[in-house]
Length: 378
Image 1 (spheres, one colour):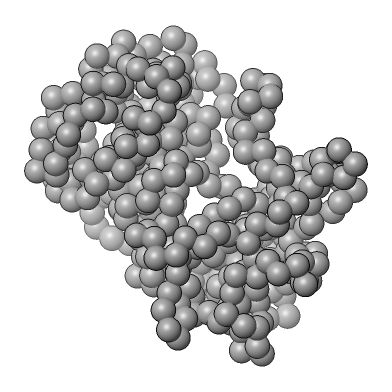
Image 2: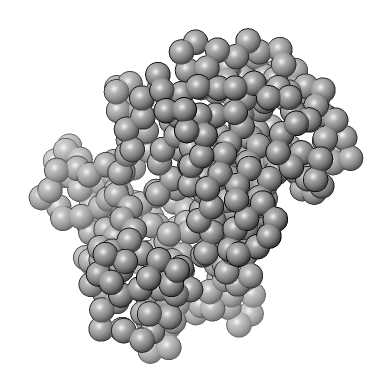
């Protein structure tokens, strides 16, 4: 997300998408893979969280390929309970299998909310600060508001004589360029844990006398770069070893190389205190629901849209991941046509699953039956 002050403004890494290359195959909702097996536990909760936000939008708000807020009015106003949810989908929705260049499969990874032991004061035991968003930081999340050709691009920087210039790099921020600005929320003990909290975009901080949640509040503007990919290129780990847990273990064994590798990812995340919030909040503004929330590329899928995910068994498990999900979040690495990041929940167990998930999978759009679906060509 950002680097040196004299560089031209950086944008988030973008995978080019030719929208003419999309195709959609209609599928009976009841014949979606795994539809009969999904218990739909918490599915209604996830949908209602998104639907509440969607209902508050102006009626002319575009939901991209699947119509407008006005066209979703009937399904958004329906009061739904969990026991009714399977029938709700069958009765009111049709499904479309998403393909790009005639290829239905894409990559699905996982993410989670880490729990970190923290302190409200800096000390030799807790030397690494978590920063809130600096007041001078200007973030433009979608340049498409300024020019349609730049949709999906974002920049960040600070104003200097009425000109937006790039903000501090990860290297500069890690070296303490913000010290003395009273922007520290808390301090953590482990640099690698803090780095991975940046990647996840949220965290639960545990203190001796309680806990708080932190949520994403912008970046320094530089593109996300995978340190795992760099570690593989250097031959430090094999693909099987390069999970989040494997990388942390390698850092413990090779602390002298940690800074060099971490600084390869110039993106730096700032956080806000959510207090005792029920859960982390995704880009849509909804509280994320474990195993029901999905981060997507918003150029392809609008926030709040219901989807069906069918992915290969993650992390050596036997059961495929086939279930109802809602597009409630985005991610720096989640770029491309058939791409998603599956939210596993909070804590170590969720982290184990998220850290090793690299599953091929497919996506299905769920569209109200009242909408004439034409795809991107429509």
